[in-house]
Image 1 (tube, rainbow, N blue to C red):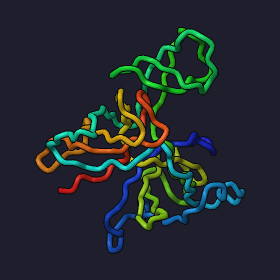
Image 2 (image 1 turned 180 degrees about the vertical axis):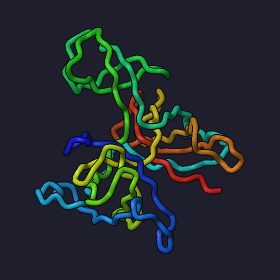
Image 3 (image 1 turned 120 degrees about the vertical axis):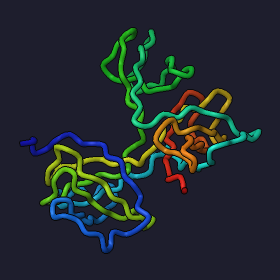
Image 4 (image 1 turned 90 degrees about the vertical axis):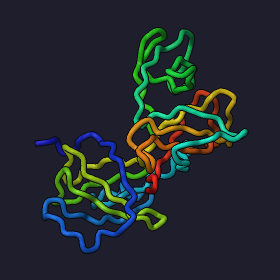
Length: 236
C-alpha cells in the first residue's frame, strides 16, 4: 500500500464548458464537489477535503488563439514555446554564485536566465524544471481512488475537474496547474511587448494544422526568461 503521505503530484486541470448534470457515472469514478478556500486556511489541522487557492502566478498570462496563418505586426515578435513542464540541463558557470541567483546559461535557442539550484558547484551539471506555479492544492476526499474526479469552482465561477493521480489516497494532497506552454522571451523583447508562437504539438486549428497563439510578456520578464502561456481551447 502507498505510504500515508505520498509526495505532492502535479495535475493538469481542464475548464469545463458544461455542467455534469444528467451524466451517468459509476460508483468508483463518481465526482466529489469540494469547497474552495483561500491560501492559509487549509493548514488548520482539520484534515477536511478541500481545494486551496495558492494565488496567481505573476509569470503567467493567458494565450490568445490566432488561427493557422499569422502575419506578424510591427509590434509582434515570434517566440519559441515548449509544453510544460520543461526539463533543462545546464552547466553551472564558474564564479561565486548564491543558490537562487539568476544566471545566464546556454539554451536551445540562445541564452536563458534561470535560478541557480542549491547543492551544485561551478562546472557541474544540473537539471532544472521550468513550469507554471501551481494554482490549487487538492486534499483527496475519503472514498476516492486514483482516477476519480474532483470538481470545484474557481473564483470566477468556472467549473474545474481534476483527476486524482496514481498513488494518492484519502488525506493526501496534490497540486494543480493549468495547461500551459513555456515561452522564452526573445532578444530585443521586453515586458509589455507581444510575442507570437506556435503550439508545437497537441492543439490544432480547424484544418488540423498547428495553431498560433499571442501573449503579452508579463511584468518583470526580460530576454532569456521563460513565462507561462496558459492555453484555451481552439474553437472549431
